[in-house]
Amino acid sequence: MPFPLRPVTLSARAMEVRVLLVLSFLSPFIVRETLSRNNVHKYCVIGAGPGGLQIGYFLDRAGRDYIIFEKNTTAGSFFTHYPRHRTLISINKRHTGSKNREFSFRHDWNSLISDDPTLFLKHYTDEYFPVADVYVRYLQDYAEQLQLKIQYETEIKEVDKGPDEEGADSCFHLKDQNGVVYRCDILIVSTGLWVPHVPDIQGIEHAQGYESMSLDRRDYEGKRVLIIGRGNAGFETGNHIVGNAAYIHMTARSRIKLAYQTHYVGDVRAINNQMIDTYQLKSLDGQFELFTGAGTAYIAKDSKGNLFLSPMDKSFLDDVETSIFSFKYDTILRCTGFMFDFSIFNDSVRPRYSDAGQKKFPLIQPTYEVSGVPDMFIGGIATHSLDYKRSAGGFIHGYRYTARALNRHLEWKYEGVPWPSVSMLSTDLPNYMIKRINEASGPYQMFGVLADVALLRDNGTVVYLEEVPVQSLPAIHEMTGHKPGRMVIWDFEYGPDYSGPGEDVLREDRAIGDPFQGDNSNFLHPVLYYYISFPSSFKGLGKGKLPPPDLYHHIVEDFLTDWTQRTNHVIPVRRFFEAVFGADLRSFFAQTCFQLILTHGDNVPLFCQQHYLQGHSVSTGDETITFGPPELFLDAVLAH
Image (cartoon, rainbow, N blue to C red):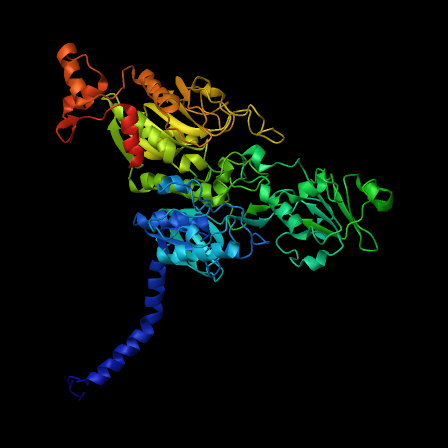
């Protein structure tokens, strides 16, 4: 006979023990599921350098689900090692004579965009060319004070794309150094350019790389040194050892390009050009052109350890003593720049090479999306392929704005939020645009690349968009979410024949002062373009060239970059818009509008129609006025 079943009564302690045993058994599965959920994000950003931090800031302030992966233990880790000689060449101009934050940002080449007034580099150092270590501290503070979501010590080693485990839509799979896989819908790669570029020169292994060369000047004492590469890294290196070396020779595949001549900040800056002085003043240092490409140059080493560089055929190197390039070097230094890291991408998502910069950049579209890889975008310095050697997209004071443009595009494409805009009446447009021309920092630094766009509507209103990538204008709706139509755009440009290697940019007749000759301006100046319908492509045009407009106006260059003079700047802009709208755009006092209505009926200036007749007047004391003459309104706007 079986024993009767009896209810089992457990003490509280026994129940606690059983619960703990069950949880201990299930915990690996619970943790695994929790980690799985935590490893899935809508937006993933690879890299917490300035570019990654900047796009992370915009994603954070938009309230998006994002994560930034950083392989090192600190933000901006690139700057803990580079530049090797620790002085940045990005200017820290602390005083501009203006309290306008946007205007001052034109001359701050280091700070990132944020809503924290303490996060400007001018609060960290008063050095015009800051020390790199200070910048590392600034970037750390930027990440911490803004509470950006960064996962450190996570090196993404492999990127692929395919369906997720549940078979849902295709997403990106990112595997880190520990084999952990993260998934995201949209990927932003902001890893910068950090892979050393090693020229395809036979014997290049005998050269020491910029990334690992000795910084101890004593190692170059009395030595004969050859530097391959004549960018800022090469000249920076030469300056560092010029007081120790016996000879310093520099060579590259092309002529020296000086930034003050080309107006390209990536070319040789004045702070680094000491080696040009020592060459021209006959101080045993030398500069020569030698195409250091595959099969055209060789580095040889003799039995005594002497190094030789020859452009001759390899047969001439069998006896280096007979070569016309028989100068002996003790050390050869390779300072030939950096490239984008293509190695982390599997075949399905590996970007193609851009034509810019000899395979140093990925190929991207004007939307910053990788060509052929939907939903993968490039941020930071690697977006420079779109404006290589033309504008500032490869530098912090440039790509902080392309990061903002990228975020605005992402907001439209994936979140349904159109590009931010300002709506106004057509009569208000000239003065609003003059205000932007005198303040805006994005178009000023990204000249010829980012432009303000005014979309003209048939009802007399204007939709004003700031800092739209010029190359995206043929598909402006896809980029911004705003319908195309008649448009006026403005950007900053140099004169077409003013910049370039060897150009005399300091010639006596370099400046134009006559507003009627504005299209002959050489220095940076605003240009306005009017299109009844913007062309569908830029095909056949050179880089940086806009399609022929229906009307255009060059605002004459100004030494102080101050475009507020009534005769030279304001009135010509107003007359340009009068031609665009086919109407008188002058501003009038309310009393004048009243008198014109009494004498002319409905045939009154557009300003009276849009303001006075709509009751848009301003009361000041005993008199009610609308905005008065344009120069008075402009003064009020600029003061604000």
